[in-house]
Image (cartoon, rainbow, N blue to C red; front, side, top):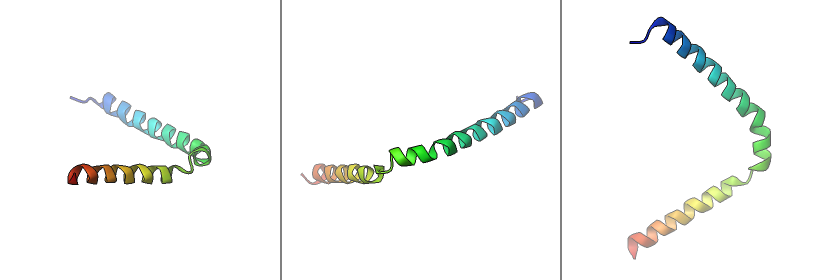
Length: 60
């Protein structure tokens, strides 16, 4: 089903793809931290709102 050539291609492709993703993440990490630093409060607010909505629907 998988020949030696396909297995070698898959291994090389995965290695290059993962290395590229790590490089892109590291180069954008500082900018993302600066621009999107306060998202934890927003995320917790949305989770809290959904929990309240769930409890309201469940008990009323």
